[in-house]
Length: 277
Length: 277
Image 1 (cartoon, each protein chain N blue to C red):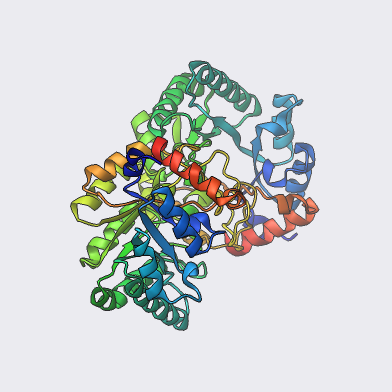
Image 2: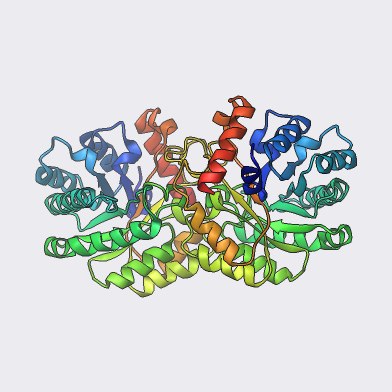
């Protein structure tokens, strides 16, 4: 790999779930030697690890620890479920602190046995409740609006406008928004809401992949950049014109790609990133 | 079936695709004897039929022919594709006229090889182009906003706000909006946009089913009313408070239900309609 291509990867970050078959130790080795500079760690990758030591290991291999994925899932019709969610989010903040990352992505949650309005109210209350711990740990919480096809169980926050509203209403330096093209590409208000997000200093993260036609699974059939219909370069230009200069995070859930040799898949990711991101 | 339960079904309409295994002749016999008063005819049900005679047959069996499903699919990167779409929509208007229905549902289309903005522009132009024929035939065109998970190939109109914008911009008595709870239930602006739709006399149709958790297929896993998380009664109250007093149309695509004995399925539909719609 030559200097130029490594330099071109300076803002590339991979989510550990993108190469799910690899342990975090394998992932780090491969990311690092391919010239990837950032890693977002999914919590399942930390099971049975010393989290502080794992954070050191990541940095020793030249990787910035971009964020921890994921907190959230605040709503629940029963108070006991909401309480358990708060406890889990507090654990996530502690894990992020130990890992040495300054950001947690929030998949906010939804409970199909109650109204979306109730779920949204509980999301607001849940984030507000954990803000003191987030601030104390120096960890920012990035509200990720999820595609409307996940409104039943994964998130009652389904547009960037809703995420902006909530972040502005919470009005804390410890809360912002994660923009994921997969969830938001269809939205006619996307450009104006990305710019609004930037103006309020709330644009904390930028996740990429692609939307395949046809998409055969609602969860695990995301495409590599360039394989689908998302106008990635256009959305990236809006994000950057809004002041964002952080990592470009590749987050792909794909049964198909997880079946591949992951070293080959990593080569495909890097090629697609250079060409289409 | 007693008088009261038949009366309670006076506004119930079924889409032929809901009981897809039945021919239209079988469907009519069953709908009619169950006390269903309306039918929306999918064009595949008319293949190899004399459409005018089929319309008579529907009315002779006491069914109102609520609408023809479906026109649309206007966008295409190539002009030839757009031209073919206009021809097909003109055929649909002619079929609606022969069938004796005053409404066509438009699934507007999208072409993943071009931007959503281009697709939307072509949708607008396509509807405008066929308005003279629609008016001459006395057929209204109902723009149906589709769930964002269909933005790649089925429709670039994914919110009721977009459908309202387009209908108001076209500003014709021959254009309005079809509200389908499956596509729109997640939208935080749903109530206000339904009321706006009613104020502009654009609320032409109301389609119901439910969103199951989990949903296992993006197209053919719709639920019966009451099986999922859509607040049906609440949405219906908004629709009716907005002045809509037309048919309540049950439109369910379901591989699971299509496998059932359709007479049993029809009983389930009627029970679910009475209890949850």
